[in-house]
Image (cartoon, rainbow, N blue to C red; front, side, top):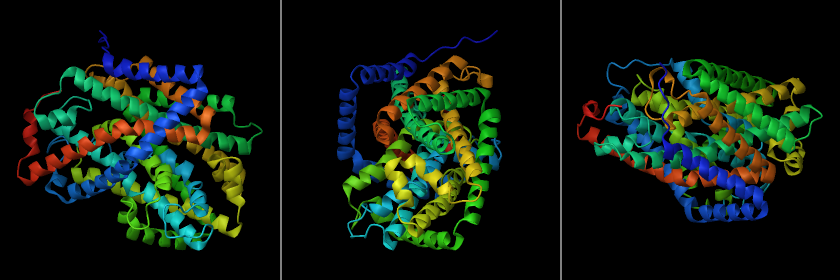
Length: 518
């Protein structure tokens, strides 16, 4: 007999009601809606921009402290726990479910912005010069290496400990319940999950918007079709259908297989580009940028010294951090759930160090290629950026490579695959949070109609915002979704430090087996 699905009403209906209200407002009075959202976005940046940057920096320090602490030896799930994934599958899923679509979209476009507007520093770097090129490369590392993965790792590890070692339910209240020694009241737990679910909807929609623009830009370059509301809508429908179907198939099928393919294609593409591009120049520029990254990491993270241009920092650094924070709470639940059987130190290695290394290599190759191409032919990419937008820069750069048409088609497919592999894991979490308990065999979490609802909402939000305001709409969605997540993630970081403190006091986390059973 099939077990009846019981919805968690607050967690399920509150985000839907909020979302539909926003959609209705945007359709009834689009100008007033955009003006209001813009004002809210400006207020978030003005008031909380510094908090986003400070919290992200503290997350990095937290990861490093836990890695070298006694907590690093603890095995998630207990000393006898067995892994559910191989190390390769674990790495591929982690990489693909975090910022894969981001490094595709921004690796070539972002440095062109920074070359002509090195606004993150007040030291007077000349736009378009060699120093601006190095600044652009260092900025890529600042935005895409250690810090974003720390934003994911801290809540994911905190949830993993609460879920596997304290045996708390599959809810964002799990870490709080674990440290309190008793569960949160039912409605409070549902409200917390609803807030973070709403943040993830904004984050998913923002990243889907970037994916739509990237795919649309490629189709525009390799076909007679032009980017517009119809094409954007068709791309959104295709992506939503794909990641919903993949998520329904489960961890060991859709998510694992797509992540494996996605990661291997990433590697092949990177090898091809470094082989056909100006290899020596790319490596030299990457080395200089990396040296700048190492020496400037702390002052740039804290806006010290000459790194204090608030407008530039809000437009770039805070934009990224807010987007990742919007994703992080619910992505943390997925990343934490799949880590059973591995140690805390292995968890940090797989979720922080290895993906960061991959991002550095990717940004070196593609960011370096873009910068060197612009330096050799001034204005070649800047003109495309100004006239068409960031989604067209990658495909203009591809025209400088051998087999340009085939490579462009491959990037369209890779952009599609990257977002699908990122979104299907989060759709899995959305569906799990929507129902009471966890049914063995994932029957409850994989109820098709629940996933179709969440996928449709994400697709509709991305289509509306991208069609109405392009990249500016994506930025606003990111900041709106990231604000509530900022406070949740900060609470998780505090809880992780409390767990570390208990370990240092020789309290063992294995006593958590006496806690509430899920």
